[in-house]
Structure formats: structure tokens, C-alpha cells
Length: 225
Image (cartoon, rainbow, N blue to C red; front, side, top):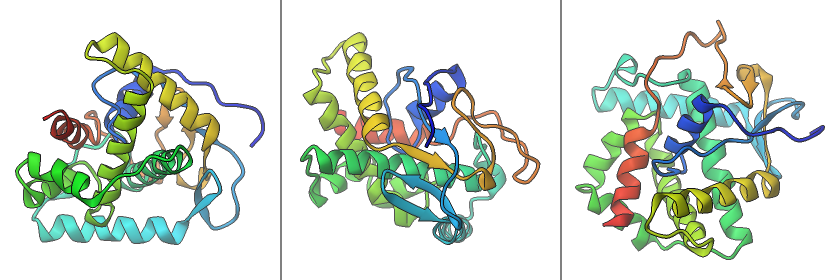
């Protein structure tokens, strides 16, 4: 990757706050880079490669999960296209899990289950995940990344007030982006550091509502409770 991407842009702040790693209800900037990636890759997260096949499998899983739960794609109202949303969720989740591993953060299965239980159980929480473009086979990883994020925030001095929480989260995001950088293949749409995935006719026009908001908020609420 040549050079460093710079964070910024209110739309990305809003999206990054809400998706995969549930970055709380505060405006946190995103730093993610496009650029050359290995042929056949959808994205590179640190040294981990997400292949196009991996992404296609997860998109198929999500569509099957939606059909099984009688949720149409039109109901999702995602900010980005379905493949873009799944890819961004996958990369963000893996980025924070890898940062947690490097910093010695552990998350137990019980901690993961407690998040879902606090929101009415897995049956209910799975519907929240699906409504926000997260395949069920990625659900536990999603929550695990939320818990990693929250533990890192506590280590960074996050307090009860919003300013302290935002400062801690900003520090974590900057560390994640420098320690476990993410690169996206342009095959899946143009990624702009200030806007996220920009409109691309291959994927259709994005809807107005942000993806992942309910799932992110529910997961954070579960930990807070």
C-alpha cells in the first residue's frame, strides 16, 4: 500500500460507528485504503486475505438466511450494496479481532452469549443481525469484535461521559488502522476514505439508512446492561 489514507467524512464516520465492530453512538472517523491487492482477493486485512470466493460465499449465506427468515433484501435499506456491506462488515470485524489478539484481549463464548441473551436471546438477536446485512455464520465474530472493542476502550480510559468514550474509541480506531491496515479490491466498488464505497452501477444505488445500526446499538446495550 502506497502512502497512508487519511480519516474523515461525516458519512463514513456515521457508518463506521454503526457497523461490524459497533463503534458506539459517537462520530468516529474511518481510515481504510483501496489499492492493489492480490488477484482473486476482495480485501486484505493486515496479513489475512479475504478472497472473492469467501465474500461470494458469505453473500450467498446472507441471502439464504434472509429467505429462511422471510426478510427481503429491500427491507434492509443498507447504506452500501449487499456485497459491499458484507465485505465491510467482514473486514472491520477481522481487523478488531486481530488487534485484540495482538494486544492479548480474550473473549469467552459466555461473554458472546451474554450479549445475545441481553437482547432477548439468539433468535431475536439473529434477526437484528440479518436486518443489518450480517450473515448468521458471522454473528458470533461480530459480537466478539464488539467485546474486543469495548475492552480496548476501557484500557484506553473510556469513562462514563461521551467525550471520554469518543476519545478512547478514536485512539483504538487509529491504532487498528495503523496496526492492522485494510485494503479493498476496486473490483467491489471504488472505496473513498471520506465517503466509504461510492456509487457504482455494478452494485446499484445505496439506500439512505445506515447498515448495522440496530445490531451495533443492541450489542453495545447488551454489554452496558
